[in-house]
Amino acid sequence: MVALTARPERDGYRGGRIALLFAGGVALLAGLFVNGCSGQIDEAQAALCRMTLPALNPAGSDIRIIRLARADEPAAIRIDYTVSVAADIGMRSRTGPRQGFVICRFDPVPFSEIEPRLMALETQDGTVSGASVYLMQRFWLRSPEAAAADPGR
Image 1 (cartoon, rainbow, N blue to C red):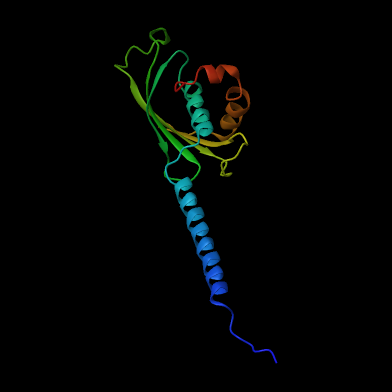
Image 2 (image 1 turned 45 degrees about the vertical axis):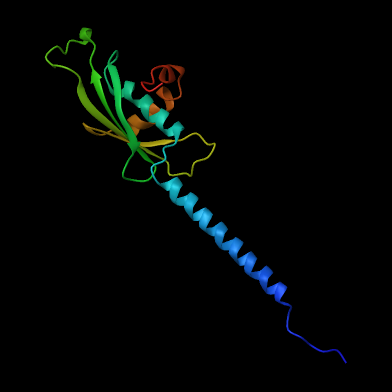
């Protein structure tokens, strides 16, 4: 007759180790998720947002970026900058550079190899129309001139 015994102690140890590894993996993924959602800025989105500045300001302006940071909402970047208008534009009544900002809102797709898509723009003068954002995305931001005019490069 065969005697039935309880499972060896060693099998219980293996099950506990698997549970521990699983819990560690979940904690690691949660940490990566929280870190990814914090203040990390996607460089492609930042470059695209910087390239909007020459289109939003008079031609020949000197644009200096003061701060580039994640905006208060998901998939958005805020750039604070100063702009000095070129003397030949005829705005001599202004003294010194003026302050401005732009908030670029992107399609909330997770970071991937897909090129970021600009969805909306807001400036110190208000919200830029959807048609203007579309035209800027299609005809300016994809051009070599926009990359050359990037004030942050």
